[in-house]
Amino acid sequence: MANDLHRRLEAWLRYGDELGLGPFYRDRARTTLHTVPADASSGTQPPEPGPLPVSVSGPLAAVPSLFDGVESVPNDSLERIRTDLGDCTRCRLHRSRTKIVFGTGNPRAELVFVGEGPGHDEDQQGEPFVGRAGQLLTQMIEAMGLSRSDVYICNVVKCRPPENRTPARDEIATCAPFLLRQLAVIRPRVIVCLGAVAAQTLLGFSASISRLRGQWYDYRGARLLATYHPAYLLRNPSAKVEVWSDLKQVMAALGLKPPPPRPRQRR
Ligand code: SF4
Image (cartoon, rainbow, N blue to C red; front, side, top):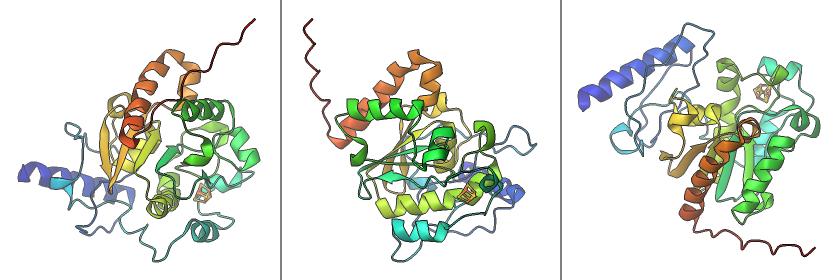
């Protein structure tokens, strides 16, 4: 077990070093491994994870995070994070954006949804998940008996990638610390990652979303579950069954009951 842990730790350190994200240090208070997802266009691939644990606390508690410490801002608040972000030009995504999409919803939400990045409508309006995929997310939230104002919704990167491409590793590495600070301030009980980028960023696994979804992970004391992104559901409606099964797990974790079915309209 110890050898396996050392092997994985060594591999992660090498990977972080290749990305230029060091130096690293031990912090026993952390419970989760964080990194940025693999970029297929580069030769640098993260090590293959072993079997996915339901929780990464326990034996992995001393494994350092690639983002360790970034969210440790004393007396932090969402307002302060937004102020610190400013008119951000920290990565190249600022060049083509219209508006920064910071996040929206209940600052004390028990449930936070994390997506990948803003699309066209979000970029125009400065709000996350307001386009077609956003409308589907709203329906999913309402099917859980909640409204958008009950939850908090945000993304890994806060500016729209051109042509809605997947954000690059260095863009994620630059922007994700603000997301981590948001999560540290809100302290939700449950985080739902919408799609692979959000799950890989928070969990540090390079596995596909179909492998990551549907099971619980520990994210710094919160329960984290990954599921398909609503944009994927627009292209693959049959996957809604799996997403609803995932969301029912979230409802059970939060003690939520689905709203009663609406009465049928008489003709
Ligand atoms: S994506 Fe994030 S880091 Fe990059 S410019 Fe926008 S706010 Fe700044």
